[in-house]
Length: 243
Ligand code: ADP
Ligand code: MG
Image 1 (cartoon, rainbow, N blue to C red):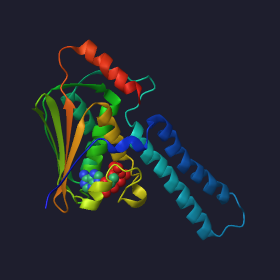
Image 2 (cartoon, protein in one colour):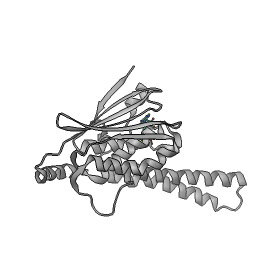
Image 3 (cartoon, rainbow, N blue to C red):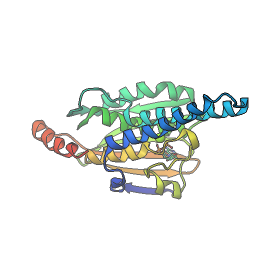
Image 4 (cartoon, rainbow, N blue to C red):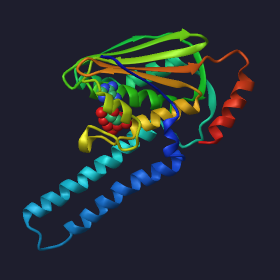
């Protein structure tokens, strides 16, 4: 049974990306600080000491994971909306993710074409990274991560598929919901929320198909950039100003 979902509208929940980032990172930092403070006590048993240290480290790992989901490609300078070559951008993200793929014995196969889209480079890369990272994490015992690019009705299609664990209907429905994760302490449940927000801001749509024990296929559709670039950039800038 193959389940299908189309969505871009669910993400009004977190309306301000920048505000949510500092909030998300501050929480685990505050928790880590609290446990470090407990560690300062003299009378602690060795077990308590180990336990507090372990929790502090987990909280710091969580802060790190949140930064990975939001800010991997972030630079100090403000981002600009520009013409992006999907082939080049996908290749950069594949380069970045290759060590993780190798660690999981995941083979990466890419069939790319140099179509142009309009967007912010860092956000687009972040979105691709979050999807590819999920794909690799869904294949702990190896598999194939496939990335395919084509054109459909003046829209650029980017299809990212894996041969991993797949999702149940219930998991599919909760995908993109803040904090929904099946990865326990290793997951943030923020990666797909970020993906939906970015694709929405680029006037794109996402379709997801998944089957348990077979794998998952994420299809992103984005408007193909026309030759009238300056006007399109201006239009896109207005949209991004809302973020
Ligand atoms: P996280 O990766 O931190 O758990 P995400 O928002 O990126 O958070 O993903 C939420 C959940 O969606 C994951 O925990 C997982 O259960 C499911 N998921 C996302 N992508 C895939 C995939 N390619 N294959 C299987 N499950 C997935
Ligand atoms: Mg993720």
